[in-house]
Length: 163
Image 1 (spheres, rainbow, N blue to C red):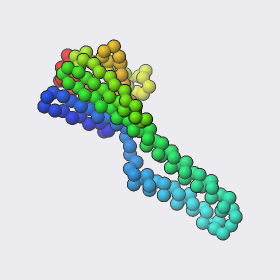
Image 2: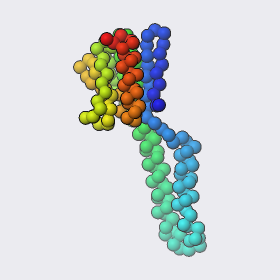
Image 3: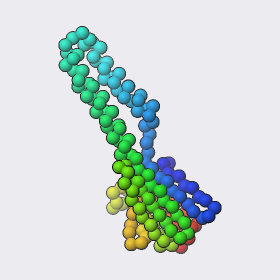
Image 4: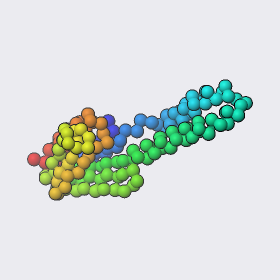
């Protein structure tokens, strides 16, 4: 799962959550090279003809479009959520793909986790409510991962000072 919990002896728990990124740099290179090789196969019969030069820009544009799309997807998935729970304070920091940071903080005693099976932007939407605000957490996780996250979150909050 793309989230980890770290607990320290001073009754502090920290959750770090991030989106899946299944394409490694080696996989990215293999994908671009494989696409180029398969897309160029029809061109081998056109070697030495003028038709090759007429079609080649379109094939190269397709390779460039795939490259751009994969790089854009990689940049859009640079999200990191860090939730720190102490007996006194619960603090959530979300770093978005463009680098802007969003913060939320509340007294741990009053923080209430909620799992919304429907009605949210995704099924089994997880939120934290406290200090007059309700914030989402882990919306980029899969449906099953959000269920697990909710159970773990409720357990940690209960153990660290939540009623």
